[in-house]
Amino acid sequence: MTQQAMEEVTPQPATLLVVEDDPDIQSALEHLFTLAGYQILVTSSGTDAIELLQREHVDLIVLDLMLPDTSGYEVCEYVRQSEIAPTPIVMLTALTQQRHVLRGLEAGADDYVKKPFVPDELLLRVRRLLQRQDELRSVEHEAIRLREMLALMQRQLAVSQNETAIETTLRREFLHNVTTHMQALSGIVEAAVRKISPGPEREIVQQLKSRVRSAALVYEISEALQDDPVEIGNLVRTIASALKTVYRPWRRVMLSVEGQPLNLSLAIASPLAMIVNELVTNCFKHAFPDNRFGKVEIRYGVQDDVFTLEVVDDGIGFDAAQAAPGRGRMTVGQLAQSLGGSVEWQSSDTGTRSRVAIPLA
Image (cartoon, helix red, strand yellow):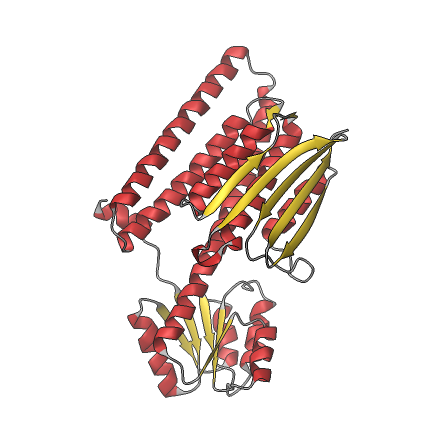
């Protein structure tokens, strides 16, 4: 990889806000994070921290609880009620009683580190929160791109009703060629990843591979949605297999798709593509932390004029009754409702089952 290419994909260092009124601890934190490669903003009061957050971009906050003006709890609550609510917060304090820990977590803290802190442990917790935040942003961006792509597809299909047979053939041939080239490029990048030893350069190429594979998926879905009606099995397998390559390229998580050949109208297949993307992405992103083994099973079919889609994993699960629905679950619910259907969620510590039902009559 050329130096120019590496510079183009090298991410900017994260910006951390340190809110700490003890000069010695403040200096130690600033030194620690600067050596780790982060950009640092420092303040000693909660009021100044809130004012700074209103004008500066911050990727993570390291927050003391005992401040001279307002408490760290109040700063944390302000962040969670503002436009920057997703910003990770690490509370760093000498208040070690359980009630203080619980109050901090209830106020919205993502992690809680007690003073005196171990530098390596604090750096590891900060790094993991930043990685989680990057993953969430990546999922949101991919979902936005897919929604935009499908909206564009629907507009193009409306216009294409007046195209001649020759124009339609040329358009399909062009899309097929682009899809083929994107798949080939994805294979080239995958081969490059395998040849590079673990390290920063391999991580950069790995990021490129995920981006290329995500882009290839857009064209693959577009090609699968060219016909009306759409063969659903091909559509589901295309999306699921591509997402596994992006998020879980190794064999730790097995994927299976079960269903008989089935044709559905384009009006149903287009939103269904987005539903499959959201459900399978959630499995690969959240069900199997720390590279644990597992499986994802996708089943679809029609019975009594109702199309059903089930996505089942044996991951860590979540509390479906108490957990606030994320963007993915909300998107799936809205899409199912737009088709007159419904979504059911069942989850425990042995896995999650999502069932989408769409009436066809």
